[in-house]
Image (cartoon, rainbow, N blue to C red; front, side, top):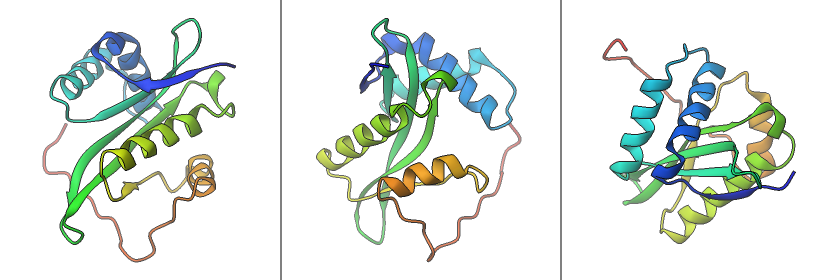
Length: 152
């Protein structure tokens, strides 16, 4: 399957929101296309995230990844949080996720980010294998903690 990876624009909003909704459903959230579209539109409009998409020759989106720029106090430098990666089931095992990851890594490197970080579900062994194959290393120094402060 031929595909192209490029940075998303507002012109991709409708298809991208549909993929984002499927991604959230993959993690057990209820479908809410309106909320997904508002969320993605806001991230793009405010330049708060970097989103890469993979599309086929017919301009159908096959997958996306979303990263958030932030900073590392210890390194006193910008870092990129690689937060979301999703491909349609028919696009899996075809290199689409790899292409999305590599495009994001290239962007981060060229934009001056010193490191990328990600978290994934402990049970998502497929994603873990992909990350390891691309040189990502499991953090054995720091534990990640999370606390909800507002009910969504």
